[in-house]
Image 1 (cartoon, rainbow, N blue to C red):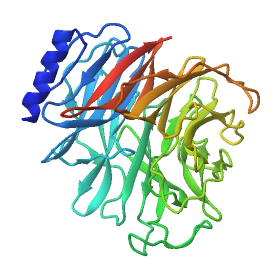
Image 2 (cartoon, rainbow, N blue to C red):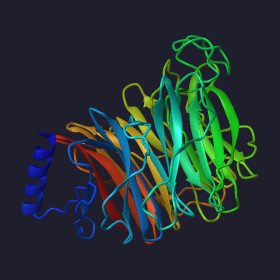
Image 3 (spheres, rainbow, N blue to C red):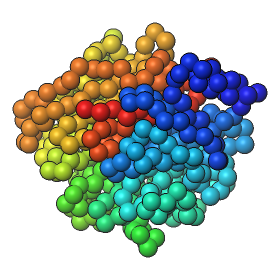
Image 4 (cartoon, rainbow, N blue to C red):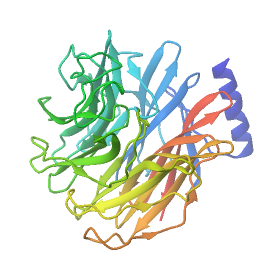
Length: 423
């Protein structure tokens, strides 16, 4: 019934002239007009959790397709900057092993091939898996777990980046250090005991030969906000997360490695927002590094009890000293789940915001970012990215454009939408 109703909706879309792309093994493709969105999805499944990566005209979009038998990770490929896509490939080599939630989608990165990281379940343990497709290829090899096996505790909220040498950098939250059970934790880092499970921040570097090294960056952090990782042209690696500062403040922290992820310096506080909350907001930061080495970061934080959350942006020349925050949303409340991409000399940020008809994805560009940690950038007006029911947007710079992908709710479930946005 789901598949047949989805097909009827596609026929209706085609009759109306709308651009669409529903994908299955050996599926069809449709060229989308400029600035129109294509649809990606596996028939008969709920499709959600988009991630997008680009290298010039090469664009890859990943997502999770869920049915009663489990979830699988799929990747769709474009060679024309995201204007059209071919049939997808399943990424996970164990059918149905993927796990997906809003802040835990499969993540994709491009660089000497395609890397995809996702959350999986093996017995009673949650694990982070990584698979690779060769440069120009559409087929993924066997997946590998990026950490030791048999670990206790929850883990996930992974992020992924690839450095100039083609090594994969994966950051995640890991509960292996929580010896006190799933609902209590030791009171470390000034956090009160008993306020949720303990999670630590880990980062692993996975080299082309499969060898791996792992670092613990911080202990007892906010336990269900996504992490972010980015690499610079000079080999620097940056990892960001929501930290717990005394007595119980949930602000964003960032750590920098200058040796390719072997070691990290102490975390720096991006902004003293002062958000005190006895729980996790399930809403973390996003990172990007431009060609000149400037670090760009967006994150959500509470503005006030009446106004709710807002989306804020800052930048840093060194990952240690950050400019005063700049608010990106227009203050309507309910802003969440930001992402960003560097497009030449501008930064583009996207987020979702609650409207009268559910979530909706929005977009804003930032230009003229100063080289130091002072001054003021120029903001374009906020623009609508998706229709009502659009959520969890993702972005990547693709040549002279930015490619955006997001989850869109439909009458029969959900699909992935992708749009190429020129300057």
